[in-house]
Length: 494
Image 1 (cartoon, rainbow, N blue to C red):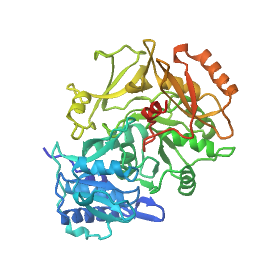
Image 2 (image 1 turned 90 degrees about the vertical axis):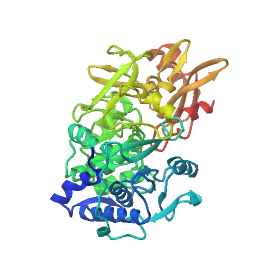
Image 3 (image 1 turned 180 degrees about the vertical axis):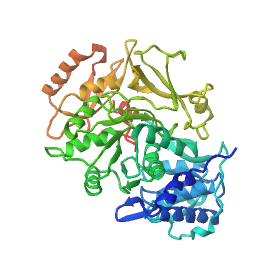
Image 4 (image 1 turned 45 degrees about the vertical axis):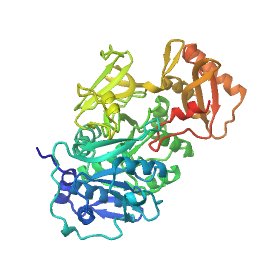
């Protein structure tokens, strides 16, 4: 049975109601919905000239600029599978993506480093689209996807560093608009949406591609790396109403402000990618008067499946289950745990990926026969709200008892000297113990007195087996391109 083509569905209402409204702003560039539709069809025609057929993989190694949604629309219209690479990948990782996906075409800018050799053809773009555009009237036969047809593929390393391909169907671009954008966030056509998370990642893809097009809103794109000064300048200049980011950026924004904090134009502040500390939530609300809507999603499910709601956000919680998804917390034997007890998070919903690309064993371990996906996250649930306790592979076993890094980190972040922190396993003689890795607030220095203050806090807050055995100060924490802490790299430091 045929399914809706995401490109046609996302543009349909805006082309009927306001074709000349601005769809995207990037620097000094703007593009209307009418122009975007024509550019997407022109890109589709160009793909057909290049001999790209439905199911062929096309790697998009583009920055967040107008050319990215143009290229993605072109892929969707032809049935080519758009492989999201962006410009955050190392040359080695991009080479792996090209080889693993068996891509036939690499879409990149002239400034991008040459990779791929003779195995894949390049298609060069500037920030608005291909250097050799093709008229849109050369394309007139949109792809009609079957139920099993792939639309795009994400490459995720999570916190482990191992890249894996995650293919998705057209519905994964559409359903989040209804389930999250409409029912949870209440997005509108008068919104200006700004996401610091890039289009090449699931969170940023839905934020900057699906949401604005579905609701007929406008999206603000930033082609360069996410530097906090640029983020603040873009907010001041363009005054977005909806802001999607990650906890690290919110923390950096607070540190960058002089007192008092500026009056922000935002009506919604949303967060994902890693746990949002309760202290950061409270400080942001105190300084700005705005709540942060924390949520959790996964590359395997394209966007949020648990989220806080406007006016109901709860500090320390990722919120409630998004309608349309099913969630279970289970023990090691797969039995659901009672309310208030920790369990492994399983999720099922209409946006879930059917498999991992070329990884059948991982697919069998993660995509369960009962229709659920094993996320690897540990949560507990109270009164319908979910609380993150860490990754299963990040848990630290101390004297036969488990330590969740998030609980230790919450205590560390309460100290005014600590800007960021992460807890990972360290070896102390023959023993494994929690180790604390800290980034200090500018102006603070590491000293025995500060160590004593931190240890005193732990004595009054957590049992002794959860106390950090060692502290180490770093200039920055190792993170993935999406902002997730890479604890395996911290473990390698010890």
